[in-house]
Length: 284
Image (tube, rainbow, N blue to C red):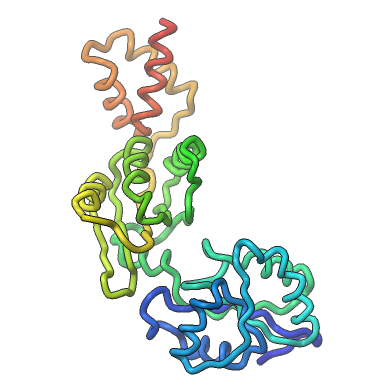
């Protein structure tokens, strides 16, 4: 183990997201020699450590106590103890606890070393079949509908491949809302990555939605990868408003058809265009 200015070192250790064989040799070494292991769920982590035949002192560090316990961990580090930070699965701080502790340690000048390994976001992206040269990690989106809609509206303008985490209970309703706001884009749903029932569903969002609806139940945390916006023409709201005013004056085949035509032409969310048409039509 390494020391820095007399302080101990905080190791941010990635652990398997399913298959325990994915643990790295370096992670095993760090966990085996750490003075303390800060774990998201000590009960869960005991199973991993037992599998690795590691006996170390575990202290819980989860989203509900992390801020409260961080000063205690910082003091241990200042006393020269080395701490390994782990979450239940994957890389700490990536939609998992750890940020409060790492942030405080950084401010105190404590040496922080990442021990890289598994991440559902990167593992799923690599097998998604979608562009990987640029991606935007959104993690878990808000649960309240109004906030969720606003978040999706903002994401719809991203040109990078989108990465979203969601629970199996809400994944179908989320996909339905994504289609409504950003259109039926190419996507990939990764479920149970590295586990026995690992599944990748690739195709339009509507196909993924249909496939999930046909299942008796959806299990396992879901990682959703969505093709970014292909918008080549950039227009602001005032420009869109002017275009719609001109089209409404001559359009003959209905509001929905006009919304579909304009959204396809400028690669804009159909719902956004439709709502603006309704607003403008009431004023004309």
